[in-house]
Image (cartoon, rainbow, N blue to C red; front, side, top):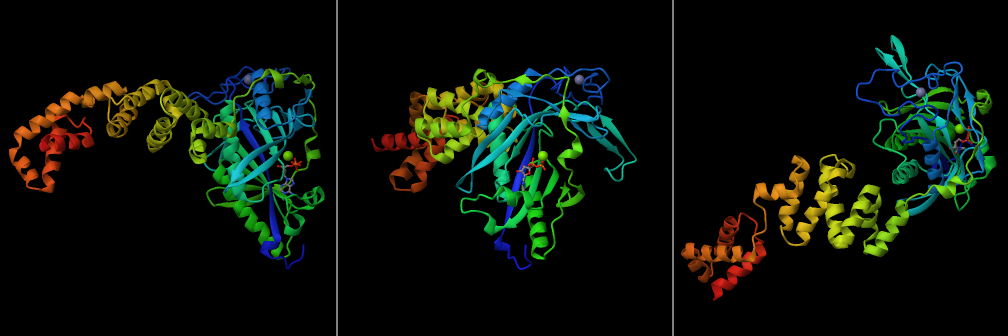
Length: 495
Ligand code: ADP
Ligand code: MG
Ligand code: ZN
């Protein structure tokens, strides 16, 4: 590329390799648990298989394959008749066998896509492949980081945790698109029930990026294989959040653009995202595929998965559900998006909407409940055992047994803060809505007891009515509707 290229004459090309941890009970090739217990000792969730002891044989976890098939279906990917496993050979202390069991030329998913929206625009990101593999163990650097530690400990508890590596085509044109993609991917994975975003380290991303001449990008955003092949790219590792992906790539776009504009070549290399400093640093020259000496894992026979695709159902996915909510419950696109981005929220909404009213359900689920949960750093997942109580609260509002104001500002909040049921809060706070008779009684009393205010009212003093409303509210313990009280007082005082 010539030295004179201007910023606008350059385009960023980005592709992601996303590792997601699959939510299975046991590891991918043995019976060890995948779930860490609190303060567990290192190297306790291990066995001869995940420690790579001689003679130990892997047995493939069916649940991991099912998860992979679900992901493949959700990404509209091809699932082949037969899929195989390979050994990827390299030495690292967290890899006891000296190779990682992964997939190579016959992955379980190929040629898929994921649709998303970025700044109002519809985009489709191609998925080149997605394959199953095992996670290595983890290293613990004592007394510092990898450069400064006195020594390093190895913990194999994580070794053998099932991962799905999802490799996109280089279809991203900006760091912001990768963030939107990761959010959408997590939504879909969560719907499938194969992934838990709240688990530490459950999402890890390698981001590939190069800079090409804008002229090489077609109107439709396509770039020829030759251009992609020839562009020098870097692979940025150590990205563990959507935000980090966007930040690391933004840094790398600027760094590479600067190099290209000054006529310097971008080194083809692997770089490390240093989150605390907000920079990428060179780690090593990029390894080539041949360096890994991939060969077939002879201890695992080829797996026939042709009929799994039919056999394993997947639920309605967020996009389809959002569109259905718009049509079926007459919600705006924005409201429907909010209601469908988490499956548990969408499920709750549907239950409440069917029983009561779609509008009331939307207010209570999307605005009130999500708002109060968010404020407390909670999600619907934290109250799954109490959804009946929430529905009961909506019923009390729908049937006018409590005021909306009390339900929103007192009952729901105390339910979340103190773990009380709606009826416990109502009882404790005396929030049962006063019956019509009680309110009328209180109105009569307030008028009898406050002749001066009545006189003032008839004399046209504005504050008098408010005073009387206040008296009635006090008598009913705040459980009357102020509008109704106002109305009743006017009628009573007029007669
Ligand atoms: P490798 O064999 O080096 O891992 P792959 O073809 O498997 O390369 O692609 C790895 C990742 O690199 C994919 O996510 C792909 O989209 C991305 N990629 C390929 N070409 C480019 C490019 N020119 N610029 C940025 N990313 C690219
Ligand atoms: Mg690769
Ligand atoms: Zn094991």
